[in-house]
Image (cartoon, rainbow, N blue to C red; front, side, top):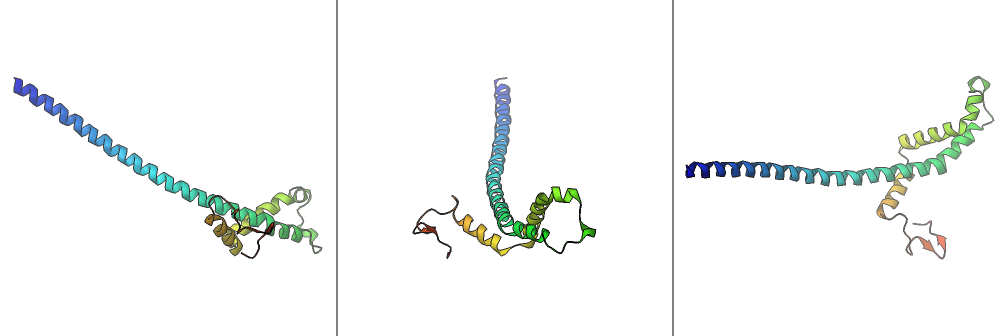
Length: 139
């Protein structure tokens, strides 16, 4: 009987060991997922930076051009949108400029993105950024 009790106890230990190994494998998979999530967060930050660069180019360069085209003296009354177009013209210009920049793959967006992605803290504040109190525009 003592041998049977020892056998049953050993069997329960092996069962517990199996459960522990399964939970350890589960923990390994959790760690793997967590490390993958960190890499994904890095990609998300890069995508956020890219989107911010697109917004900058859209707001600073393309949107003023779209606004200027809207005020063209060659407007045709047949295609005029009426009061609604006048009321929401600025919002429409913003959306149109965003779509133009996003779909056109502007080289200036790539340039701004590359410059900002080289400096993880944002714009460089060392001697390379400003020369004599002025912004260095020559690279």
